[in-house]
Image 1 (spheres, helix red, strand yellow):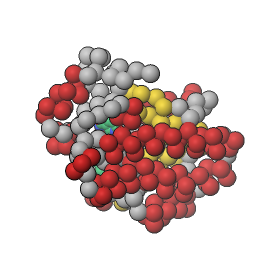
Image 2 (image 1 turned 180 degrees about the vertical axis):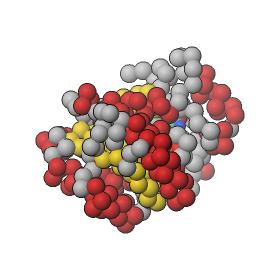
Image 3 (image 1 turned 90 degrees about the vertical axis):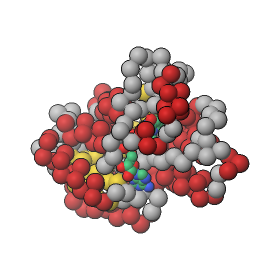
Length: 251
Ligand SMILES: NC(=O)c1ccc[n+]([C@@H]2O[C@H](COP(=O)([O-])OP(=O)(O)OC[C@H]3O[C@@H](n4cnc5c(N)ncnc54)[C@H](O)[C@@H]3O)[C@@H](O)[C@H]2O)c1
């Protein structure tokens, strides 16, 4: 029960991937979880399931991270209900692969706004509460795509995730005097049931072949890293990017 008494707010946590897995691990450790996601029904259903399975307080609220008003409303409701916000996990991200010559303004904006602007909105809204309570743990989920040259239509995604890493380092500097840490986790290829619907088969094979460690990455690999960073053991780590990638990227 490492997180008993802690209140965690997570974005994009009603899917089948990293967001929900992280919410579950926080709940397993006794933390209160606020599940937000753009998908309203799944959000409520995941919050209800987590509450029943782990016996913790869990609240579900629909929130599109690209919409400032929705973000601010979620943060206010969380604080009004629980009196604190200890952990923020900015998990929302999306990709719409396209070669640069074919990339529309809409493709660019959708990816940048979901991966980067949404994290900025949430950090800006949550920080005053964390500063007041002199405690906070922020995790931003980036991607190893930020480090690589990729020719598979990921330029906007890689740029957004690299921006998120740079943003997180500046955030860590500003927030440190208030005992608030901020770190980025950069997953490599992490399997979930929706991946085959997003990426072509050959690309999935290419990504799997690039992983030296002999098994697929799963959302819990990332969630366990997040748990370490938000728990007392991770207190002195801030401004870092930790790759969870089975060795597919080493630095
Ligand atoms: N899966 C991977 O291989 C991988 C690799 C590197 C990085 N990542 C990053 O990890 C994060 C989680 O990805 P995942 O694949 O584990 O899926 P996930 O299940 O954690 O997230 C998908 C969820 O995001 C929600 N969502 C999409 N747009 C949203 C928006 N605008 N506002 C709120 N919610 C929104 C969807 O409704 C869905 O429920 C993303 O930031 C992704 O870029 C994933």
